[in-house]
Image (cartoon, rainbow, N blue to C red; front, top):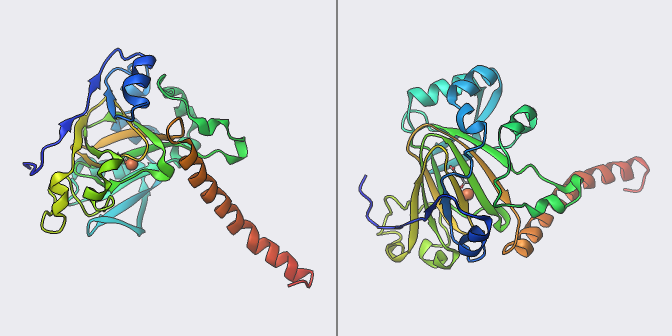
Length: 281
Ligand SMILES: O=C(O)CCC(=O)C(=O)O
Ligand SMILES: [Fe+2]
């Protein structure tokens, strides 16, 4: 497909020192693709479709269906991972619009996989400074067919983000937060590869960055950058959202709101039930 709008390429770097990363990308809030950051990972060569199919093929996983331009929250398909991998190799998005996305349970169930990779040296997650009971699982696996799409969005709580690409290629288009108005407040219906300029005319003036990541690449996306992702092949990726300089306050506030909200939701019915039992209700 020929794009209507031209985007600037994201920097691709090798031999990037931590100091250079911080000075050129992390502190100024610029995305970058680092080509050699995960060369030492075992997962870099071992996490193939066959590996997941043979080792974990019987695991029941959840996949999300993309319909009418978005993921439908109540449209979840549960099936064995092996059968899912067979489907995504044989089909593409038009015939099989299902994506195993944001999956954090898989790595919790298979802790042996945690030794296949390590946190890239560029990052340190400040969530790790919270008490253990308040931490959240941050690592997520994505497996999907060619054509799988993630609509335009910003990441949760304004976190920074990295993704390691292990199989297949993904196209990323991203916009700095100051482009928000031209993105119609990061409206999920804006498709950067084929925008409907009758509906979203201001998008024609949005300045975006563009890259394709393939096996072995690591992409860093700073807090609040708006992004859209398209799988160009069947893909396997590992991602992590983290807190750090530049997003500490907004991130902690969002996180605490959700964390405390969930706690209150869990405890209130228990309190009401025990008050009712003791006749205080
Ligand atoms: O790889 C993808 O499809 C989307 C990743 C992403 O944007 C996210 O996890 O927030
Ligand atoms: Fe995202």
